[in-house]
Length: 419
Image (tube, rainbow, N blue to C red; front, side, top):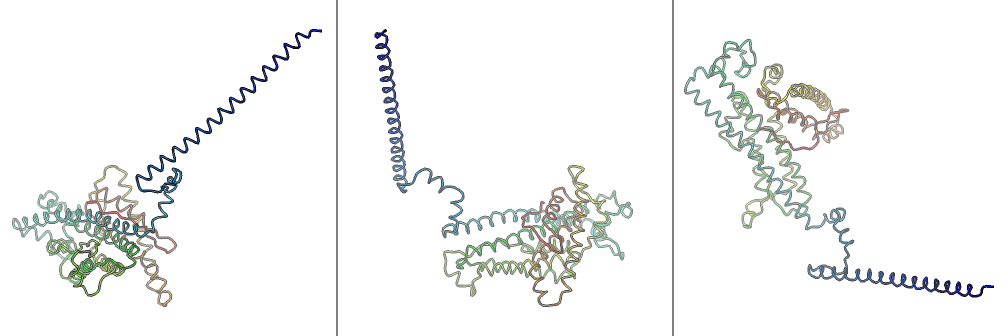
């Protein structure tokens, strides 16, 4: 038997086992070192975090994961009801009102400049040839149409097509028409928009800390000027000519004031007002201004039907052929919604029972808005010169008015008239 071979084999096995044990010990020791390194890194990160918090004056126990959770949108939204946020929100609303109102004033001023230039040109023509100008603007023949309408009938105005003065006066009339329609649309838009902002201000002024006495007086003046215009209109001639003349003299006519509070360092000024106007009272005053504005729009008795019938002869500045189809679509949509609204209002006027009247009043706000919006859209489509931007404005306005199942809904929007 070979005892020497067995002894060598046993030695090799003992050596292999010892190497395996050494390797396992080495591996375990390296794992322990890694764990120690991770622990040291965590401790170092915590120390760095504590140093950063100490520099900024924050807490020393907030980890990075907690910071991310606090900075998440859900957590930020949950902090909105705090009083300090209410003050910021109130200031934000007021800043937004002033910024938007500035755009409104710029557009109104642009149309005022056009009005002054046009009225100056008409005054020059009156000095140059008063008889001819008066005969064109004030025809004595019964049933004769104004100059603007005559230009739309090629058979009746064929003899006057080549008259340079006639063409120039026609352009002046179109400019005055744009001044009236543009300022009416602009003022309604800012008035309706501010009515919504006044309701928002009530939510951030529950204690009545802000007063609006001065702007309330301005809104009441706005109402008085419109009411006086309506009362005197039967004796002043056509709406457009009457409006542009009065606008040159009375700058506050149809000029909507901007919402602002009576904050002042001089406390004696506030004592001049007997009854302080709160945000709630201001909202009611603006609502009354909207009702007077509606009377002003509905009192316009100028015939729109004639303008719509001769719409093919009107000038439309279009950049592409697709605008022609849009004109037809907008006019068709307008006529459908006008008919539906008239049917609803006719039914409403027939209701006589008290509970029915109360129910109708709850729906009256959207009906009220839709009636004014449709009137203004009809006026814009009746312009002698309709631009593509104005046509798109009409289209977007109509899309926000929904009349279905005898219910009216007007989607909130803010679209200043392009001019």
